[in-house]
Length: 107
Image 1: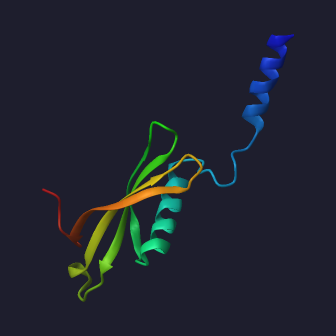
Image 2: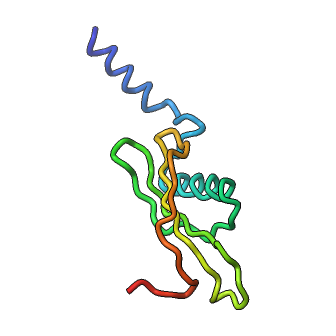
C-alpha cells in the first residue's frame, strides 16, 4: 500500500503546475530579472547577456542596461548587472559588474 501511495504522490507532483510566481525556465527568469531591475534602477534594459541556474534552484541573470544615453548612440554608456533570483522568482540581490561604451569589445 505504501508503494501505491508513493506512486500517486509522484504522479500528482508531476501534474501540479508550478506556482504562478516561479519562472518556468531561463527565458522567464531573464524576463523577470530584467523587469525587476528596470523598475528598481529606473534605466532602460537592452537585453540579457547571461542566464544560468544556481545550485539552490534560483537563477543568475546578466542584464544589460543603458546608463547614459548619448548621441550618436554608439557612444552611449551601458552597464551589466548581475541579478540573482530566488527559486520563487523574487530578486535576492543585484550588483553592477561592468560599465562600457556601446560597441566596445571585450579583449
